[in-house]
Amino acid sequence: MTEKYEGVAIGIDLGTTYSCVGVWQEQNDRVEIIHNDQGNRTTPSCVAFTNSQRLIGDAAKNQAATNPSNTIFDVKRLIGRKYSDSIVQMDRLLWPFKVISGANNKPTIIVKYMGKEKRFVAEEISSVILSKMREIAEAFLESPVKNAVITVPAYFNDSQRRATKDAGEIAGLNVMRIINEPTAAALAYGLQKRANFVDKRNIFIFDLGGGTFDVSILTVKDNNYEVKATAGDTHLGGEDFDNRMLTHFVKKFKKKNNEDISRNPKALRRLRTACERAKRTLSYDTEATIELDAIYKGIDFSSSITRAKFEEMNMNLFEKCMETVNSCLADAKMEKNSVDDVVLVGGSSRIPKVRQLLQEFFQGKELCNSINPDEAVAYGAAIQAVLHSESVKSVPNLVLRDVTPLSLGVSIRGDIMSVVIPRNTSIPVKRTNEYVTTEDDQSTVLIKVYEGERLKDSDNNLLGLFSLSLPLAPRGHPHKVCFTIDADGILNVSAVEETSGNKNEITITNEKGRLSRGQIERMIQEAENFKAQDMKFKKKVEARNALDDYLYKVRKVMKNDSTSSKLTPVDKEKINSAMTKGKSLIGDSQQEDTFVFVDFLKELESIFESAMNKINKGDSDEKSDSDS
Ligand code: AMP
Image (cartoon, rainbow, N blue to C red; front, top):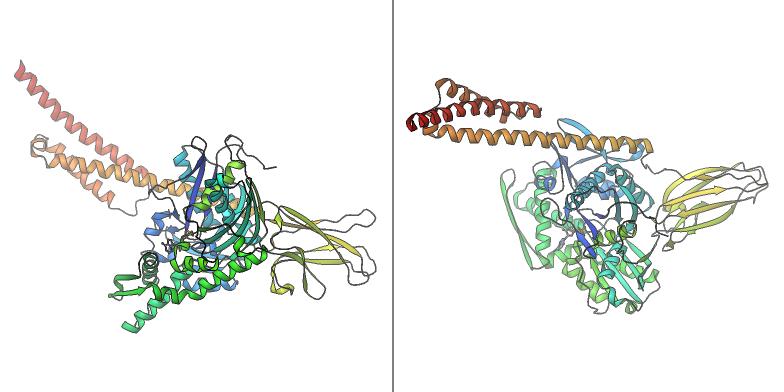
């Protein structure tokens, strides 16, 4: 039974590079993908900090080249990971912003905001992006939004899912459900093609985005969506292709000019943006050029790249994608010719070579292009959201069964991982295994929980550990370990010892640097403070603009001789000196207080209007004199 919630519910695709939000529109019986304040249907997953304000989305991305060390992107690559993770260590070198190891080995981003150093964890930055997506929806719907479904790559592990859910909570959202991106895309595809799904169909979703790669195979029949298998890489996508091109051009620049631009964040940022643009061009053209004026030490950079070269430099990554496609089919125990539809999702699925390799893999099968690869995931998330909405009546009657992407188990004798829930098991699920003590009179047993596919426990990912007290007994004494995965794919583990009716139960807690309740509460508070600061800044800008507009109006009147010549010398002097003061206020970048602008505008209005009234009165007196 699907849990229902009151109020509007939105679907958010929280992407590595772009995010997208959708909502079910009952009157049209379909999902509306909502455009942001810039008119764009996707919003850069980017947050920037400056001396005066915080910027989110397009505004943050647009100033990235001039403020690289305080412009944060790619946090999806950090979320739920440890600082010591080799992936974090690799990425860190390519980012222009600073990442250090914080408490609990949590990656911590350092920026300068309003002249002071500020530290953020990935959940906080993601929460800022989620808040922005919520605001976009609220502006469109003209009503507050509380409930959301957020998508994650199918291959996200337990800690990455929990961290994403925490980010939603910090953003003040009620995260009704976390669903897998390819599953969401399949829902979107299914809904658009619903007439065709009376017979069973096998749908293969190929989702290659900015930072992650996901594939899933689903069987759909009569509105029942059952995920058969899922595979992928949480660290493979468009940005890796950009990075390859970036490295290529850095080398080219060095060869040509004997200068290394890789240590200059500003130059690197500009080159990276140009590479991304060139990559997009290569999806429809066979050659792309890069032109950057004075990129480093005043040197202009102009170069070109062919599609063939781009394909060559990324070929092993493309091939890696195809290997994953193959292993997903093997997991689903399905032949490639049993696949009815191959659906393309994610911006990087537009790359012609990727399409060609995929089509060849599926023996020349036509790939489905009917859904927008940038919007399908948010579309599906919005469908899932409406399934949880109490108020909406015209809900599509869909049933969704997802799977767990990684095997889960505990460490047993010989440092072996004993699998309790194998990967690709349908969720939600509850499984209990019995284990026995290995020594006589063992008073405790340490339960170490792992996820992964390797035999040796330490080759897998340690999720957490806890101990269970046991009564003294000869070796071989039993205890039970129970794994529960909820519909969000989030795991809980408990252990129990049952002798003489005694039970001892422990639930796994956040061992992997997950935020504590107290930390989340503090971050919610901080997010509110940031919002208040953003609001304060907006109000100040509005007040300053209002003063500036009024000064412009007064200046125009003063330039008009027929009016200004009628002013008394005292009024003229008063207006001129007020204008000088107003001009200096406008130019004062240190001025923090909104009321200074508001009050001065009132003062200026009063001076100017009283002077104008005198002129108008003089004119009308003159007029009435001449009339009489
Ligand atoms: P997504 O995460 O699905 O929003 O995908 C974003 C990624 O798709 C970014 O790395 C983009 O550079 C990439 N992308 C978007 N359009 C194209 C295109 N026409 N050709 C190649 N890559 C693209």
